[in-house]
Length: 154
Image (cartoon, rainbow, N blue to C red; front, side, top):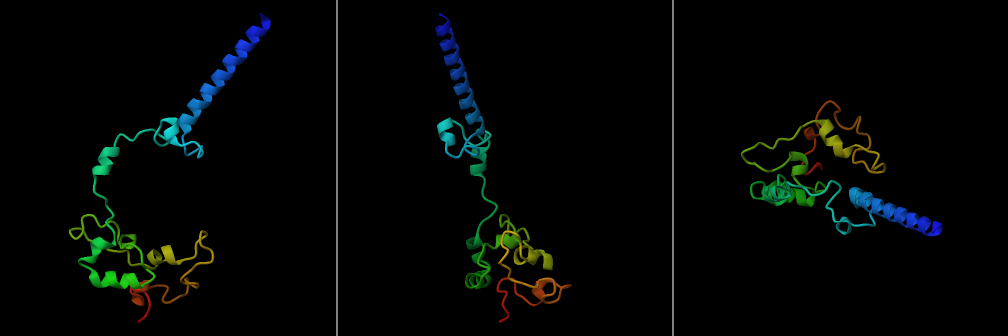
């Protein structure tokens, strides 16, 4: 009888450990255990279901893309396709939602341009201005010499 009791206690212990492991995995989700998809655990995301999901999907996006700008700013759009600044207008100008009623101005400072053009740890071998501390006129914005939409001289 002693052996049966031990076996039964061991079985109960193993079942409890297994159940605890399942609840722990469900709580942590795929972000912590990439091999186990959230759908398998019956959850959605780390914090469960987003109650505002349907409302978020109904909202129009704030960022509208280059195509939105093309209708009124065709010349600048065409310039941007030819240059290395071939990214969305909203990268510099901010979200297009509400424009043209809302002004989309850009901070015209040297520091603003250096957000992308200065060497950073993530891109140690990439810099568009190698001597950025003394390049051009350090006390003036880059747009004194460069057109932001087509930054080469010419």
